[in-house]
Length: 291
Image (cartoon, rainbow, N blue to C red):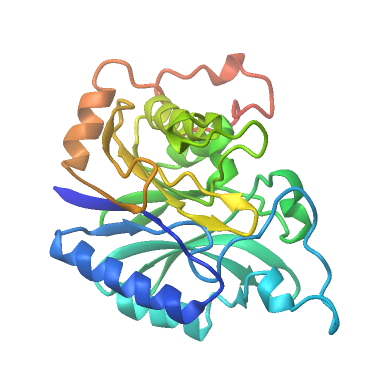
C-alpha cells in the first residue's frame, strides 16, 4: 500500500516562503504516512504573472526583472539540494524555472533520498508562455521507490499523446504538476462553475482512465498577477474515479492505494495498452511506439 498526496497551494517569487510552506507540507505528509508528494508547477519561484502577452523586458527604470520572471534555478544548485534533503525518504515532485546556462525551461523534478530521480521539461506551451521558456521535447518514465513514475506539466495533460507516451514507457503513476488558471473570458465568480475548472478535472480523469494509471494532479491556488488558479488537486485511480480532491480550495488530497492490485484490476480484461492497434494509426500519432 502507498499513500500519495496532491497539493493545491499558493506559491510566489519568495523562495524562503516557498521552502517554509513546503517543509510544513512534507511534515504533514509524513504524519499521514505518505510516500509520494506532488507539489504544483512553479512551486519554487512562482509562475508567470500573465499568459496573454510576453513578459515585459526588464529595465532599471520600469521593471524589476526578479518580479517579472521566476528565478532561474540549476538542477544541481543549492535550492534543489536543499529540497532533496527535506524530501528524505519521500518521493517529492516539484515545479520550477530551470536554467541550463543558455535557456529557461518550465521544469518538474522528482527528488528522493537526497538526490534527483527524474526531470521533465514542459513540452506544450499555452498562449504566451513560449516567450519566457524554451519547450522540452520528450516524455520518459523512471523508477522510484513508489513505482515507475512519469511527470507532466499543466498543458501537457491536454494532449493524449503525452500521457500515453509515459504509459507506454511503463509509468504506473503519473504526476501532473500545474499552474492551471480559471477562464480569462466569461469567468465564473464561483470557481466550481468555471469552465476551465471543469476542463482541468476532465483531463485528469480521462488521462487516468485511458492509460489505466494512478494519476496525481497538483495545482497552484489563489492568485498571482492576473491569474486566478483553480486549485482542484486530486488523486484519480486507474478507472478514472476521483479518490480524493481538494476541490477549488487550497489543501492536500490524500489517497491510499494498493498500486499493484489497482492496476491489475483495471487491466484484467480490457487492457488499453495491450489492445492498441499501432498498425492502424497514422505515423506520428503514437502508432510507432511499442511497449
